[in-house]
Length: 129
Image 1 (cartoon, rainbow, N blue to C red):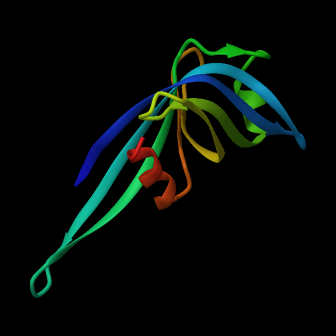
Image 2 (cartoon, rainbow, N blue to C red):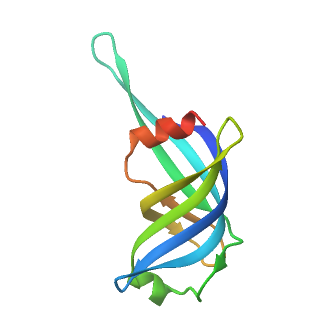
């Protein structure tokens, strides 16, 4: 079963990319983090449930790019990183740096979605915000 646990809206997002060996700022953007729980019941004696947390990063469609984006350029990108500010429960904003984002859907002129490599400690930290 897949379940959305929490959505976090972030401010002042900056998307970076590595292309041709150079890391550059690709866009300023609004960021939405979605923390998902994937669980599966294991039907053994007594039964139990295995849970895995996944963080999805969604960049909103009003991104301010620093360069024109097309398929040929995207083919040269070898890594994506993101820096954004997230508001903690005490009201203070904290900078969050997410590295090695895995693109899942890049819609030119629309939303971009990424997954984070499996990091259960980050998911738990985000859930506590």
